[in-house]
Image (tube, rainbow, N blue to C red):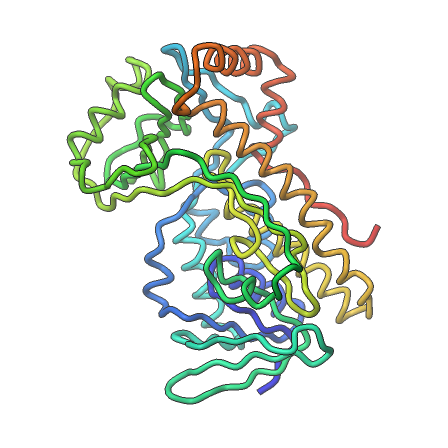
Length: 395
């Protein structure tokens, strides 16, 4: 079998890349080790940057998002007992974010894929990219008891942090940058109305908290917990009581609680590899970088990788611009490191770090107060939150 672009991973980045390439007339095959139900069962973030929303519209998969998604003009930073509004739309010349769950994005992309001519292999095992430094790369994998060879021009590694793509690159080629945070997020999904029409990021002496939502009737709440905490130690009642303690009193009084649908603890880390390309293999999304969810950048960074690679490949196949292939990593990494910085800053400024003395805590409080009280500070937060612009690839 032969295709132009082989995509490893049917996560949102792999599916979105496949959809954009198909619309440009570039055939591709997606290989996924899990089944569709497992892929859809992953509970992930739901805040989409303006650029991600525009990219989904470009891909032709935005009909349900535009109907059901919640456009947010701003969000709140809660500290010192009050909520401070960050006016995203007013501070960024009209840009907003969209609250629409990653599960729903994946569902829309999977449905678009199934109704197109695109080929997807689910339940593929023993996936092996080969000859990626040559002009004739290929992938072998097992499917339904048969070993399949897929020849291609290029390989897109969209298979996450634990996937095979990054591990295929020889030792000594990649440089890794990592920061592991000494806490995690305990998250609860519940069929309750949101406590606020906008997201609330709360900094409190007991730890960080986030009030988010998936729809007008489904909420997602988080609280900071130690990195060694066990989810079994948290009953629903204990979670709700702790969340209330970390919110301003007026907000806590409005909180409607209910039984959890899903409860889990997510560790926090920052991780980047350089470069993001090796021969014919290109890394996208979690295969190349991970950010703490505080800045709402994980899915959005993956989408910006997709935008960059899809635009390059369109020029390669339509204009013969193979010279642009070598620009992929540098273009992506400039935007990635700015998002990593913002996510690190939001994490550092809003969470309680074990071992911080009173001086360090007062400095963090002063910095947060300065940014929120300053128009320039609020604008900086807003510009980063709605997403920095995508870079041109042929300049």
